Image (cartoon, rainbow, N blue to C red; front, side, top):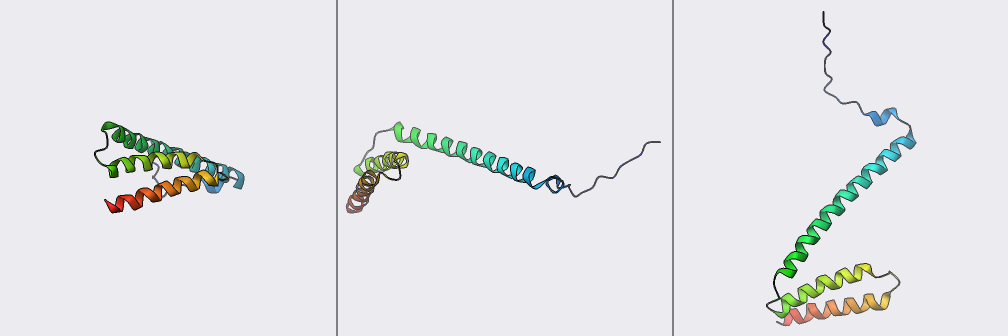
Length: 104
């Protein structure tokens, strides 16, 4: 005669049965996996944006400024935090684009 086991509808939380160090290590692995997945989505989205920006030349100064804003933000993201002069220069150029775009 075969014995039938009932399936429990509540999953067992295996983390409760492990030590604190193992739980923390698992949490860190999960967080890193989420970060890597999000980074890949961000890179994929960035690729799509860049393909669109390269697809056709700007038809106005506003479109050209939008492309320049994108490139300047990429550049600014690579600057060292201590490089305040270049950060200020990028901020000034972006502010000029915003002001001049509003005048159009």
